[in-house]
Image (tube, rainbow, N blue to C red; front, top):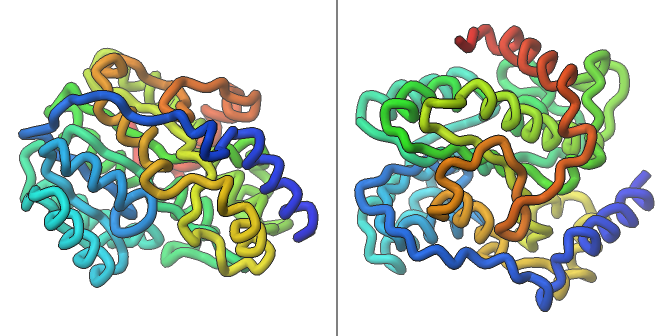
Length: 312
């Protein structure tokens, strides 16, 4: 199946127009974020770090939520040095462990009185079938359920801080995702690529349903594709590493890949826009699998049941 994946990745990179001379998706907003608080999961590396840097340059208080504290502290030091913004801190968060997510949220709510921007950026790509601490398949567990729970726990503060924004970093690969509830966690059949694309499709469905539920609260929710970015993500697969190396001149840098996240977080014209999907700093169409209402409702219900929570 690796040959199929190699060809598919190449096709997706062309489809998303990520050639550098077509990479016109740049955030042009000059909005400042003084007095605003932003949480960015996975803000210690790659797109997340560049997003954190971009928001820090605008004056926001940044909380980098990540599993690796050493890398997180190094990233925070780099951002503070380059931007002059000393309000960049690191908090431990392991999205593969619900206890860690609840501990992070509890500490955050105790220490912070506001939250204006939540960027669910972190993600995993596993080479073999792996489970989270709670027994979930790793891709759906981290990329979807982990952020689902984190958002649930921080939602009241987001409402109190409104206007506020939630951003879910998905991927164009969601187009290959099929939400099969009989095989949601690879119970019957497992393939890493299909599991990853399924979790990215879940990001889109989660965004649309949550946006509908938050109408009138002043909290918006949008999903985005950052572009095909050279970050080293997925390099545990030799054919993915080979593909990225061969196509590196076509891929975005992490700074370029962060532009859509930054734009969705700050652009004044997007303050009331919700339930949409963005790519290259503009709204993009959503494929049918990301719009199915029955699948959306069922995934929401099952996610609540798996996590033992109840949304209002």
